[in-house]
Image (cartoon, rainbow, N blue to C red):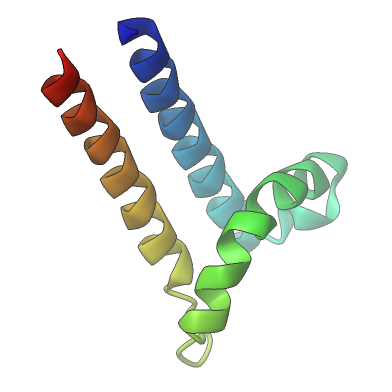
Length: 86
């Protein structure tokens, strides 16, 4: 059972890094590449609900920051549940 929790936490960590890379790619307009398209297909379904709730402030989109915080809270929650069960 510990392996499942470890795997979930690691998958959330990897996904967080993918979202961070995607954010940096948007700053450099690298989303038009094949790698950028791949990252967009992976990240946009997760980021879109946050963008609907939190509109951009002028040229600044803070919704990815909130999305990353939610990912970290989910990671902490999984760790807490694992602690309760063990």
